[in-house]
Image (cartoon, rainbow, N blue to C red; front, side, top):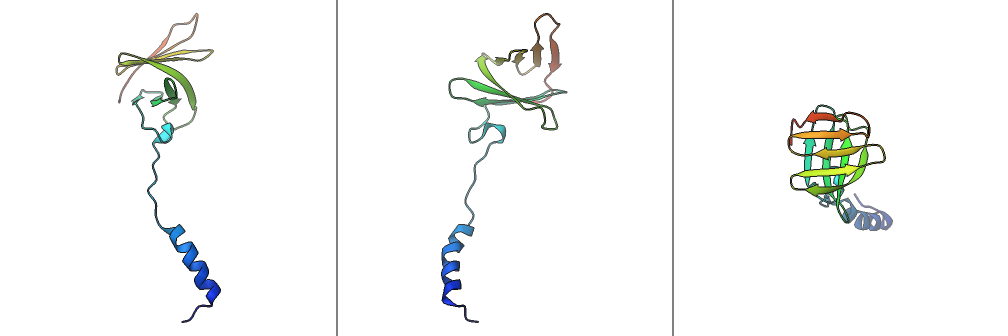
Length: 111
C-alpha cells in the first residue's frame, strides 16, 4: 500500500506529538506536593506550599465546597482565617471558630 507524499509528511510531523510524556500533577496543590492532608467527618483539608506561606484547601468529602485560605504553620498546627471563620487543624482535630459562637470541633479520622 502506497501513501501519497502529503500523507507521509503529515504522519512524520504528527507521530512525535502522539508519544507519551510524563505528567506531574499533585491534586489540589497543582505541581507542588501537598505538605499535609487531613480528613474529618465533614471535611477534607489539604495543606499546600504557597508563595510566602501555606494554602489551606478545604472541601467536602465529595469534592465540592472548595475554599482556599492562606495559612501559617505553628508547630504541628496550621491556622488560617477568612472574613467569617478561623480554622485550626492539627493531627487530632479541626476547629472552626466564628466570633460570638461556640467553635465547631471535629476529630481528624485520617491524616
